[in-house]
Amino acid sequence: MTNSLYVSSPVNALVQGILREDKTLHQVLGHGDFGLGTFNDLDGEMVLVDGIFYQLRSDGSALIPNLNIGTPYACVTYFNPVKSFDAPKNGSYLDLQRVIAKSMLSNNLIYAIRVEGAFTKIRARSVPKQDAYRPLVDVADDQREFRYERISGQLVGFWTPDFMHSISVPGFHLHFLSADKTHGGHLLELIIEEAKVWLQPLDQLSLDLPHTIEYLHANLDQDNSADLNKAEH
Image 1 (cartoon, rainbow, N blue to C red):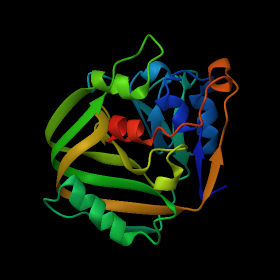
Image 2: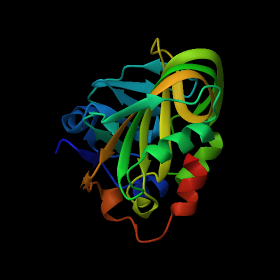
Image 3: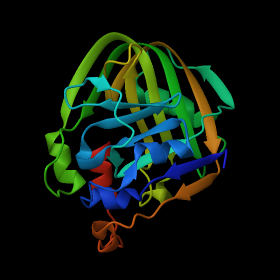
Image 4: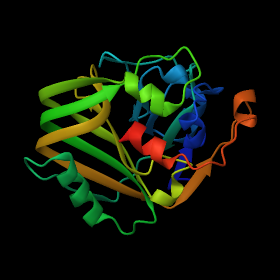
């Protein structure tokens, strides 16, 4: 499906602490060339751009991972933007969100978002690899933040409707990757110097349901949206 978001596992499972699945990066790559997620044991943040995965480690460094490693949660699509526009100069993350929201056809669709340019300030984070089964909201306390100034790069991610909170992270979810592909993390805050935005509405969803023992025996009926919001935003 060319206009579809592929989700490798419901985010609800990740929220509850199912941090390891048997889906490999190579398998995920069969569903798209653009997206984000994380790696087994939460070993860094994921960026997929132009068909290449990057692993954004807990020290803020970025590397290209082996495609045979696994992911407990990944969201990808084939990126074919239908709209582009300038980001607000000297704008904050909230300003960026507002201008993107005004360009969206409907709040009931998913949007793939790519922003590329120069930034006066970027604040991002990642979490260290986890050795034990822990709920995501507890793992978030271990997050490590990094601050970059006068840096060029791109933001990769999605806007997802609130009603999909058990499947994917609702609202804006963006990861940063520096232009030299050596630094990055989950975006927390920014000031834009000059950048351009590309937007692609997605009106189809492909969701995999894992068959690991942990997933099959998990109780995913509870509403974890508050914990997800705390961990991801």
